Image 1 (tube, rainbow, N blue to C red):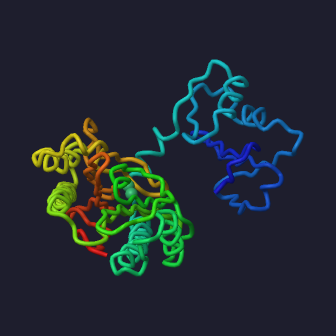
Image 2: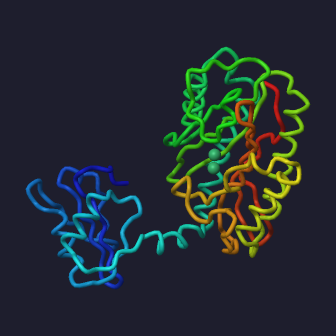
Image 3: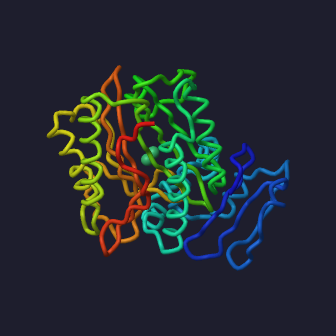
Length: 326
Ligand code: ZN
Ligand code: ZN
């Protein structure tokens, strides 16, 4: 994994010839050399790495560049290589990465199981909520993710009370009170693959309105998972969850897609969103995460990672799906 730096590291992969990994001299000791896979080219502090890449590219017209490559490198390459055609590399890597093999699914399952153990700890009250700030609780969840086997924490959302109505709330110094909904959405990276799960809990007795709303979220989630069969269009999975929320009168309060692919990135193809007619294939791994968010009041989301298999949808997360009182 290359450190994102102003010093360019770039893997140049011609369609037919051998790939070359270009790295700055001080990063070279971190590279495990694999002559069977790529040539290593080290550049020194006074070299121009963009010119070196241009030399490797040669007269080729069409190039795909990594989606996360810094624009300063792309702009410099475009200066160095005028009149070429540039495409996002995800056009090639996206479909390859969306289809997981057995070893990748095993990594995702182990990451999901580790995240489940953290969810179970929240449900069991082992991570106290009331009287502590969202940020403190988020810190605890992050440490638990690592203690349960993740190599690093990718993100932690703890959204309490009215903050639970903001889907991507940043954990704040707000102190969690009693009788509040708390959305906990967290994930990390384990052996290069990501976890991502959400559980909503309530710090006391839920009101009938909270229970009714949560029941709709849980029903939409179950419908989304059940719909995620091989051959079903991504948009249909989104619709299966969304229709239940809309029929219950909460349609305008579910502002995001039903799910996203997951693998080496937390968000990658396939996206379960209206308009995406791509059918699910065996080996696709993705989240199913409907939510309802009532602005200024409270919200709830329920998220599992699911794999489409020839035998039907296989959920990798199994922590309690109910509105657990903690
Ligand atoms: Zn999530
Ligand atoms: Zn997610």
